[in-house]
Image 1: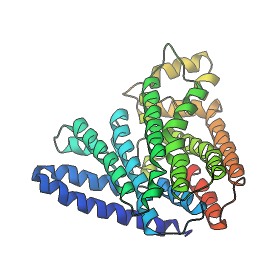
Image 2: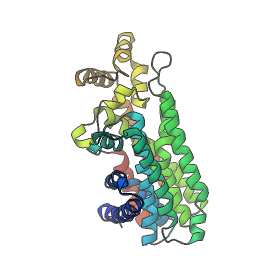
Image 3: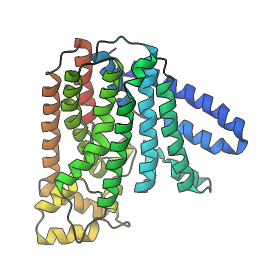
Image 4: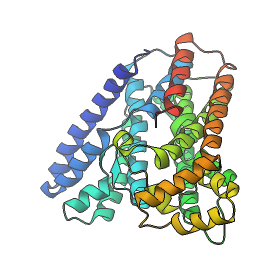
Length: 344
């Protein structure tokens, strides 16, 4: 099944069905839960379904056939992602995602206690992820193999988020470090976006330890490349195309590799400029343009592009180490290009 559009539609169907079921269940509890049900549906309506695809192809790489059970299991990854995004948007104060208001922004627009309600929605989404996965219809013995992996996935994702919050905005006394930025990217993005979905799929399918090792060698550098591309999009991307602001990362002084490389390469005057502008919540477009110009001039943007290219190469080489069906290998090569080479 190389057609990602067809795969995405199958995942979307599972999520729409879930939204329909939960709307009936929530409104059966109380009619005032309508805003929660409506935002739940909106939260599940968007996304490329990349995490679901990695779980699916982890299963297929283990030699298992296409079936509706694994489609439902894969859809659970999108619920984990929706939950993480909901909480992440609260932490970052982001108002837009995929060109639509984020959950807390949507609740605020309706005059409701936005942060509290969005936190509840995020918790609900994470709970639904476990429900969808465990009720996917695959044999119980298959599902039991994945229990430790689920705990690991959630622990790593929360660790990455926690470390990023600790390090965001640290300006005057502590400059950002590339190694620390990549550490956050590894926990927060690389593992739950690529490596762990692949491990879940392969473990469900009874894949060998060698296959899991190859997926770590493929998934970690690819996941880091995905986050590095996201960092570039967060500063240089066109909001009309990315669906989110290109000022938030600079206003928050998000500890990205892009910013760390810029600070490391900047001279005294440029560092003074960065200290004045980066981390300023009122940063405007003209000021952001001067930071972008500095990032270009000092070579930081190109360094990040080089890091992305190197990691995609490493991921491809790791994929060659494990035996798997040709269809699965082809799909994973294609997903690597899709995940890390998104357009600015």
